[in-house]
Length: 225
Ligand SMILES: Nc1ncnc2c1ncn2[C@@H]1O[C@H](COP(=O)(O)OP(=O)(O)OP(=O)(O)O)[C@@H](O)[C@H]1O
Image: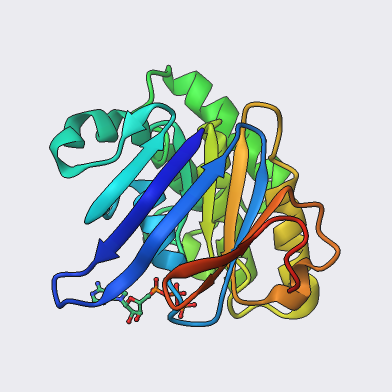
């Protein structure tokens, strides 16, 4: 599903955010990317979302080479991705269910299919009682769940969540991680970044990628976290 060889990412100001990254993530894997603040977790996720491109090296997602020249193909690939952004990116002035439905507007689905899938996703995240609530009236944790519903309603091949536990108390954070983990199946991989390694000690992940200063320095089940 994801194949990365010797990837470097340098931002325009010269910051070398990722160095010699090698990754191999298979369909259906549950993967955590950990590391302290500033280590490069979001940068790696941005590469996987097609928001940034490797400065050098090779990255392929579902067979698609991730490079600037492939922009139109990458736009099509994005329809198969379910991103959950750190800052949620919900549209204010719209209800929770409208936000989920808007996330599906570029998929080739009928309005009633979109409605059905959005309802199902809101039910899965436990928010069927907040469908018509404007998103600005939701709590932080509820907003987080709507952002997850929007990502999973699309039935993506890859769910990518950036620090989904940020600012949540421990109980809610563990609930969110368990919720995200529950979407893993044979066709869907789930990749989550977090600096809160204490929250994932009991998690059932397949891979743990630990980043330090832009380098992967530990990748496996045996990683000590
Ligand atoms: N757009 C940018 N331009 C220049 N440097 C950047 C940019 N975005 C991130 N960086 C730098 O790249 C490095 C990695 O940042 P990144 O956001 O990937 O870290 P992170 O591990 O996700 O951190 P956090 O846990 O705080 O979100 C940091 O030194 C950061 O300052």
